[in-house]
Image 1 (cartoon, one colour):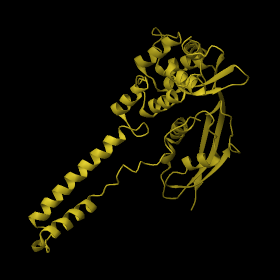
Image 2 (image 1 turned 180 degrees about the vertical axis):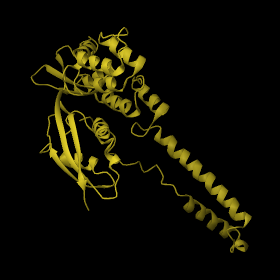
Image 3 (image 1 turned 135 degrees about the vertical axis):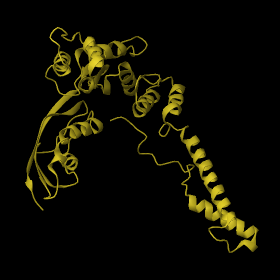
Image 4 (image 1 turned 90 degrees about the horizontal axis):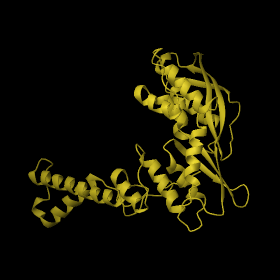
Length: 324
């Protein structure tokens, strides 16, 4: 898995702020300097002025905190992160999230050694195409380098509608049948089949593999002694079957969007080398109002290798009854 900054503690220089502590300190200082005002009421104008001053100081201290965060790769966001990434000659791709840009910048830093290395190739793969979700670099033999690509093609095809779907279809050489008034659902299915066949979500199309490989094989990217092979990540398709029991006063409509939320949760949490634990699945289905979840499939935790990724196949969720 990729190195991140998520496990780092907050720097000590970032101050924990509390309005009441600032105000209390100001009030104590004021009373020390002016003993005759030792019995101030909350309604006293002097107290109100101290409250204003304490709030303004709180804002100023927060601005100091934010200014320092903007200098740290793990905490910077938006334009501040763009400027940090630019220092390492990394530019934000169209619609790229802060998390993705941060991850690519880390790989660029790690891979900037004279000999290249796994981080160098991973950075290049992540930067090659916006359809690349993740990449794993391994060396099965001396001088041989394999880059496994995890793709976002399936999710991009599934989310696109109208003109955006037409644009994606053109990439794969599939045009909408306007004469038959082809709707998005049918058109989307044809694009998905042309791009990925029967492969699960996360598999990379031959078109994407070719595009990434073209970048990696460039003379200014590939180390001259390396033989590179770019392949799709191996997608492990897992069917989910579960019976769910609700409390008697729970409306059954809480299950209406459960399949969609499960798929979204997997897209957010999963990736190369991410094991699918039964406990994770049950926790995602145990919504407020659910009495218990009886998970039939998968029957055991799905443990995968670093070049594999989990994708959901069919999801069958049954309201089995009500119980306490």
